[in-house]
Image 1: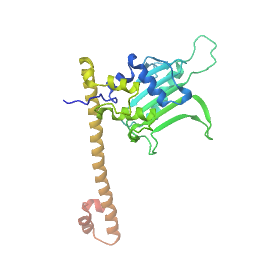
Image 2: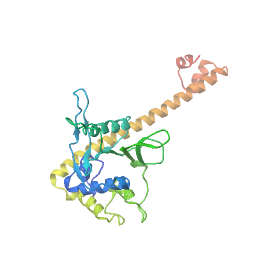
Image 3: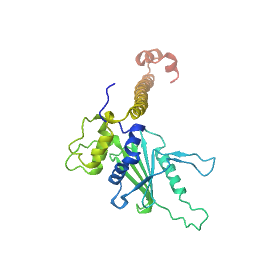
Image 4: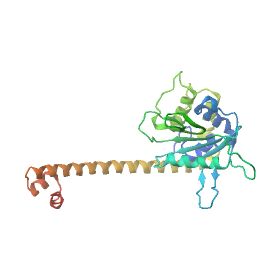
Length: 283
């Protein structure tokens, strides 16, 4: 099977290969700094246990795609979501509770002072109808004043991003362009010649991976493609079902109008394609 030159970062393997390996930590730092405000820039990061267990047995556990901590003790959760999930916002809020609770100091006179928690959601779908694809969320009061600075949610709706690369592209825009278009590129774009992007594309080359990584990527890519195909099929079936439902609703509306005009049940049935019993039920 012919392969794209670069791996797909939206596969489990691709995401972990690019952002989750110790040797590539500088790439993750550069990516997060491109997303975060100037005052929240990161100098160093330490990868932490991705699986978080709740304090009580009856509580559920959370498994993050990526979990790390910076030099100030602030926590970062990076979550990749490939398809629309009904309660994705709830899920990310739930995830944020674990790095908050783990900061509790036992056996001391702890005063509840917390380090910042950031949840970054990379979404290969759109969860609202606005044109904005980059959302920075904090706790605010009804007047729009920030109530609490230490809890931040960043959501990136990648399907909404369609900007081409230009000389004026920001580092943030370059990152989003690279991640979204990497599987379709044959070489590094001329406007992505920074050191970080050169390393990003180098470690993402399929032909440069060892055999074990290639096998793992193949499995991850197959899972990703099967998932996408399932969604496409469901969408297509939903469209067909919606069209048929629309036709039926239109036929019923026409039948009601025909009956109100004094047409017989048989005439209405012939006119709309509904059965005699279906027309009778409208009386």
